Length: 341
Ligand SMILES: Nc1nc2c(c(CN[C@H]3C=C[C@H](O)[C@@H]3O)cn2[C@@H]2O[C@H](COP(=O)(O)O)[C@@H](O)[C@H]2O)c(=O)[nH]1
Image 1 (cartoon, protein in one colour):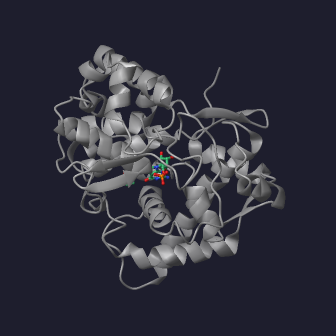
Image 2 (cartoon, rainbow, N blue to C red):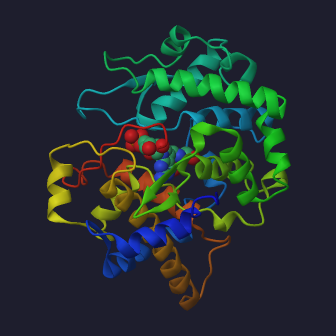
């Protein structure tokens, strides 16, 4: 059986048939203009990944890649049932939530002498140890703890069996191709197989596999083993924050029926028609925004130093969503519990 449509083609297919979610041309242009103002700044640069985020690794070595691999293996489903009662992890005097709580817990474990980024450790780590490592300051635990334990054991065992326990070996097998690395990850690590069906077609968004490639490129600052010739073929990462910020910017429109569901906090299952429409249209929307940004850059005199791609636009929009949480309260995010995003 042939594989699923690749992410970009999946998004195009879904967006063309979507009924409850639509990409808005005017909103795409407005979002592109917002991003253009950032294009010459530090945010839309591959070396921004480290300098802008204090929890990210300070080095560009094998240990840093090991950190990226274990974090992106667990990079899913942090949203809380009630925004005011959520998992928090304090690290070096600062409390973090969501994705950053995951990073803070990993760094806290390393400081405590727990080798959480070592495959030989997390291949056999127990559920109780995982609960301790990712413990919350509040009485609200990080969601899907049992799933986190399972995917950690699975990823650790496979990394030991197939790549000598070292993610750098997997990166080097990709021979500086982002697509090859993404497929190596999806073929070897089942928890990364973000594939579903839409109107009879198998579609893929590969959110965690793509962000793993992007974070590998970022932690290596696009140099050496991270100098991927085809890095711009990686799309945005179809999570639950990007749709929210794209809707907030007017680039994505929801039907009244879907908006009512989202406002009521109704859960959508992974693979539901409306859930796939939200993810597919978001991915397609960022592709159109990128095309628009590149068009606008063509028209202006000074050019940004490096290539603007969907990864850098995604990172910027994701950070924007976190910084504008208050302004976005009216736009709910969709609630899906799964290990894929
Ligand atoms: N589209 C996209 N989704 C991303 C990321 C990140 C963090 N990555 C980079 C950002 C800074 C670092 O430099 C990392 O490289 C996490 N997520 C997703 O968001 C959700 C968590 O959200 P909240 O509950 O608010 O923490 C969850 O699905 C998580 O998987 C990204 O960048 N883009």
